Amino acid sequence: MRFLLRFLSLAAVASVLAACSGAAVLNAVTSRSGFETVRGLRYMPGDRGTFDLYVPNGATARTPVVVFFYGGSWDSGSKSIYPFVGQSLASAGYIVAIPDYRVYPAVRFPGFVEDGAKAVAVVERLMREGGEGVPAGRHPVFLMGHSAGAQIAALLSYDKRYLARAGANAGDLRGFVGLSGPYDFLPLKEERYKRIFPQATRGDSQPVRFVTRSAPPSFVAHGLKDTTVDPENARSLTRALERARVPVTLKLYPSLDHVGTVTSLATALPLGNAQLREDVIRFLGERSR
Image 1 (spheres, rainbow, N blue to C red):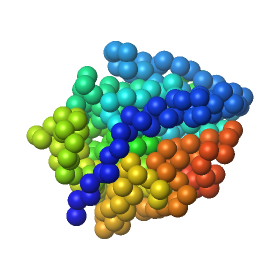
Image 2: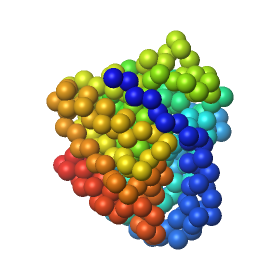
Image 3: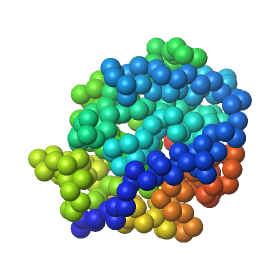
């Protein structure tokens, strides 16, 4: 079956997170100790072609790296909103890369996914060669995203063509983490989303269609109070992974809404459910070995 996203404006997510009651407060009170931040590392030309890197103190040649893609309805968002995510994962011992990527109307699908693949390729090269406080080595790589960013991370994880074309090694992925992601959301009804996902390529925008036995182990999280992205997307992706016999963990959080799954990562303020962060860290740890 195909499941329609109950699209409210995902752009509102970025607005909420950027507001004083959201990410601005989280970032203001988030600890800056225990890790180093390197901002504006270039992975492609243009204003949105950079990523920020969060490197925990004592990082080694085997420290895992998480590439995190934020949401924003594929037409908004900024890595500057998410230092609290970088700190959350870096404080647990993970290197974190948070890239910007081009959004509509500058690009349509699959442009933002292709940008994501380029970012992953450059992060992988940095991990191999070292630099910016990262020791050269074989760092386990995870892809993670929230909302529209989870769709991007999922396509990069399951449709191997993107990373291959960008020169990244899809076979090196240790896992995928999706928070409140749209994975199975056709047919589209809103004209805006029809423009973002042109008819000619629309079918390829659905991560569920690319799940195979070679997919990386996956952690799929969704809040049951989400009225922006239907939680059935998480269930549908989980069923596809189970059919392909891919290790998958589905976690549904009764108290969380759409934004709550990402603010639950924050360590400084209780904006969500702390159990989600514990579950994510546990998954990353188990798959890093």
